[in-house]
Image (cartoon, rainbow, N blue to C red):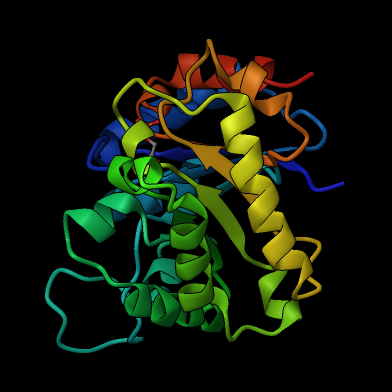
Length: 249
Ligand code: PGA
């Protein structure tokens, strides 16, 4: 059994002081549940505060929202895998749709970042997903497969098993529109088939896009979903604790 992962993507919210307060509230509100892990992706400036705030609980983990593919150098504004690790990260998001669509990140760059993450012993969380226009044109499968091939196509099975994939349809992120559990499960099954073709069985597949306290349980009732990646609904520590506690049986 793959443990369920509840990943909180804070995006550009919660500085170090706020992160400390958040973790104190969350730890108090949420006791470990067997088979459930909670991953936090704060802004880079808050990574150390979050990592310290986990207080070595084995069910909690801190991660970066993005890394550069080079380990160091003249890349103003960027952080590398080794720097994120030093700040306490054990995972990193890669290719989030905001990185792709707001910052112009390419498929090729996501591939380089996955390699860099693995070299730094960070668990890569690769985000994939189609835009509304691509969905309406019936291109969801083609787009997702292209993103998987570009980022993970050259990995050996052993590395692929360390990867987590987050299927996040772009039209569902921050919009209040989420894919139906069946829509999500269909794409998850395609991703699972792609992984099976490469003999990877431990890779987790999360769903993301307007997941909240109301819809999380219904989404996680689909066996294809190994967890959720949540933005807006992860920003309040008590609400997030409740979501993680109540979203699965
Ligand atoms: P949302 O964001 O839950 O606010 O839609 C999800 C994400 O972008 O990872």
